Image (cartoon, rainbow, N blue to C red; front, side, top):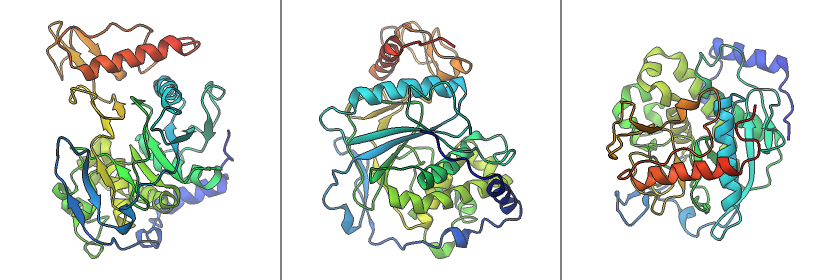
Length: 362
């Protein structure tokens, strides 16, 4: 599937609009909705995966609606091989009992087709105008979603925003509850510790900083119509944050995550926080009941199974070791003593690469 090209005139307007600060927060937030009720804190209970549930009436009665899996990506080899593994495991679990998965789309924001068009369902959108991302390619993510939501024919009522380095461990149900999306709480997203910066984009009249969830946009399962409201604001906040030197320095590589959290709060949206949404090896030691493996961190160990994080190990798996091409088939398994989560990750990568046709070919 190939999206319609955005007109050059519109891209020029977008760039000029940003340069002259016409991305107006009030304009983008016109659909702001006041949050109803309060949050119920369940704490980090070992037996309850739900950390917090928004206090809205909509939380009663879980939906069975299908959700569309959407992953934003580039045509770089680094992004491509991760998408291929992700799509392999999506197909493996999609139709198993307990799954609410619908269709899958790789939202390709490189602007032109690549060599995976026949392998993975793909919708092409335009990147931001040249120079607008300031070398931070992730800024293209919210802009990609705005275009995809506007132009694509999406049958499902819900969207799962995912990333290339996600592997589905088991069937994922729709964790959203009506107007309350489901998100994953990241330990490093701490709005209350950056209140002076957050207030530049979330004024006091909008409420306390605690209204901003400790999340990024992924993984999130959200009602499509709600994401259509949030996404333009997400673009706006992302660009404004990147243009502010203090904010850019404070948030660094997670800036776009903070932007989504702030944009959601500006629309009065609170997320059900699900710590069982995913795990992140090597810090999470077991897969347990979690649904997604997120392999963003390097896994480095001695041959005795001791973690050497921050130092290249005698045995390692780090996606950044494969920036220019895919990992080889049949990676060596971790030595004895390495956590089950890391072993499971490598085994799942190996299964995918063994079964994906043409793996490693240019």
